[in-house]
Image 1 (tube, rainbow, N blue to C red):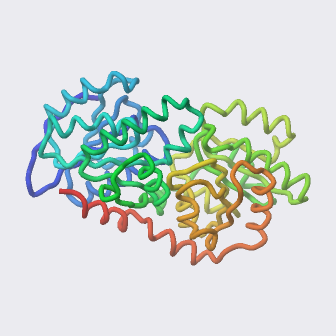
Image 2 (image 1 turned 180 degrees about the vertical axis):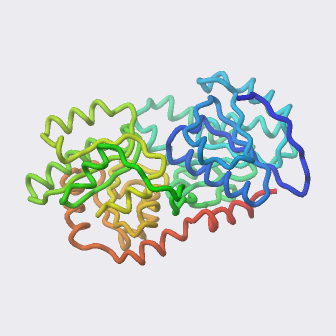
Image 3 (image 1 turned 30 degrees about the vertical axis):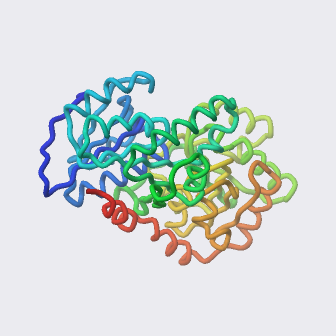
Length: 376
């Protein structure tokens, strides 16, 4: 993979460069790929620039999109290479994703002055870094307050994210809320082949739940496993749960499942390239996060007519579910509340047509047009 590219700057075809840490499986990365594919399909010259070469979406990225890497793993080494990249490659629009890459991207205004600098914040930073020291939080706020002034526009992926940015000193007139685009059609028309873990879940006669996400503290799958135990042992409802994902907490989650005797009820599938076929086989989708900027997986589930239970965490989920009118919300970090919401969600499903209709508000076409309006 090459570190630099030479591109044609045809004024009839706007050029866009997305900047992110990598293209590993994740909500932010899925959004970038979705937008990049949409732009490319509409004749826009697209580049995706990452710090390192990890790319779990290689089979889903439009072949006309240029992929570039700075070939580093630590952000502290990024600035010199980013400057060199910007001096060798010119774009009409540079879209940086997630603090602190957003902060580093101020150099666009120095080394590529005609480029429009757009920053996207995908998460509630206050929640994400609430366990860090007061000095860290102070320096983060200062960096945002100062360096975000260099941006032409700042995108918050929900009103909750916008409110958080306002608290950190970002000027209101510079922030625009644009929800994330969501892929709502299966990525392949070929018959889906499931692994043994998924097939065990599929063949179960019990009610089937599904959850999707990286195994990290934010997603709080430990809380979800505890809630499944409560549903089965205290609320007397026999259910099975399949989790699509992987990550640093896998060992802890597996241990929790074993300690609660849930090996035949909670199944860890690993990542799935395309989760939509799994949603079609489930009775309920569950999100157990402590916080979310948006919640792409919620919309994915709704697009298949699947009912949703979600923690009423900061930002996205409540906005997507219209404060609970289109889904079942529960308390954050409370397994009893989550368990009760699961039972309620199974007993009182919301009309699938209403869920599918709501999901169209976040389609690639709808959100893609909103992004095209802000490009130069």
